[in-house]
Image 1 (spheres, rainbow, N blue to C red):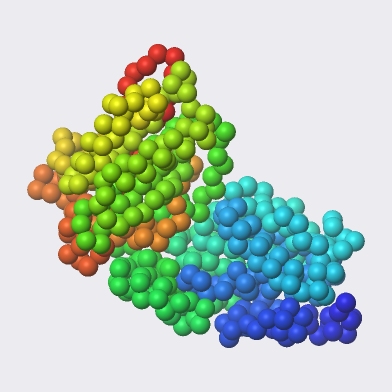
Image 2 (image 1 turned 120 degrees about the horizontal axis):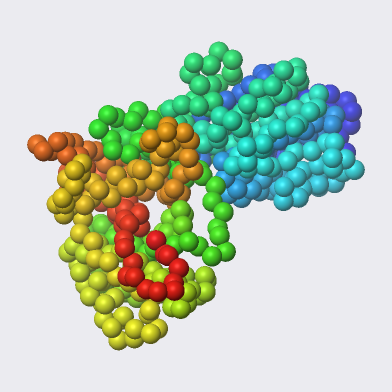
Amino acid sequence: MISEEAILYYADHPVEFVKDIIGAKPDAMQAEILRSVAVNQMTSVRSGHGVGKSTVEAWVIIWFMNTRPFPKIPCTAPTQHQLFDILWAEVSKWIRNNRALRNELIWTKEKLYMKGYPEEWFAVARTASKPDALQGFHADDLLFIIDEASGVSDSIFEPVLGALSTPRARLLMCGNPTQLSGFFYDSHNKNSANYARFHIDGRNSQRVPKEFVDRIIRMYGKDSDVFRVRVAGEFPLQEDDIFIPLSLIDNSIMTEFSLRKKPDFIHIACDVARFGDDKTIIGYKIDEKAEFYKKRQGQDTMKTADDIILLGEMLVHRYRLKPETDHPIPVKVDDGGVGGGVVDRLKQIKRNNPERFWWLEIYPVLFGQRIKHKYYHDSTTYMMAIVKKLLQPFDEDTGERKPVELILPNDDDLAAQLSGRKYSLTEASKLKVESKEAMKKRGLPSPDEADCVLLLCLPVKPPKRKGVRKNG
């Protein structure tokens, strides 16, 4: 147990608390953030990936719990994964391995509290998907922790501003600077005078592997928004000729998703590798949520077709799909180049055993094919436009906020590929995104993950069958 004299000292010396009590050694930037929370009411940290911000947030929570009487510490993040699997797990790690802390603090899946005071002396985890996540907290010593703050809606911050009228209240928010508007963006721009601000560039952090930095530079360049956000900890530039801005993609990634027991629709897609370093990507989409199933180098069309069948069988079993009540699953495959071999193999499998593979409905798709459309030059541009519309957080007609209709996997390659594709106008004044070949000429890798997502989002018309549910 920490003595009263030690508590009085550590209340103003969080770095020493981390070293002496938690038994950790903060790096220089982590130490500065710890000191800032002790003396400043509002601290905002923008950074690249992997710099140790979740660790410093966990240390701040434990320090505040042990050095204030009856504190309340509401913690939030855009998704359950970020909040519970990363931040809350980090809190557990530092307490679990420390006998002194373990004897005083009780950690549960949603709450950390002082032994004997579960309702008066606690930290609590609440996802920012709930509008009232940070409402209703009152105490002389309040500490708000907002992780991945760029992805948190401004409405979540409103009760925080009111609570900060209490002199001993504190706010610490950290995150990748993904959005060019909002509470977190303003803390580093027009409202910067009100905050103690920190910027952590991954290139200067001993915690970020040089291999990660080199890979992002090699694949996407130092001028890319992916490098700026993921490595340098800078806000994106969003060039005028980029079709889908990175902010939309990151907003989608940070959107919470609750899986339904029986999905409204299921789609499968495969972008087939053509040659060299290209990857074959197989993915699936359950209602709004897209996921990658397999990523492979090479052109083994038989193995690719087998992987698609295995995925389909897994989904049929998981959701108990039946031919009497459910539509087949649309399986959309890149039909250009060697992709034709995958399509042919899938058709053969269906032909040889139609009863078992009733769920398999194959849709060959050609990228870059000219189409008759008022606004879009080719099939790739049309699919990119669909994805962009699904990612828009506002209704185009009313301007009101709406739920994101596509939740992307947290994948750096995907984010870079979608946000790196430029567009132009043709002589007929139609939009045309650059081709895969044009992207490669700019030194970018093949947009394989992105093309898989385009296929997943391409709407198709299922064959009409009586007495079955709609599946897309």
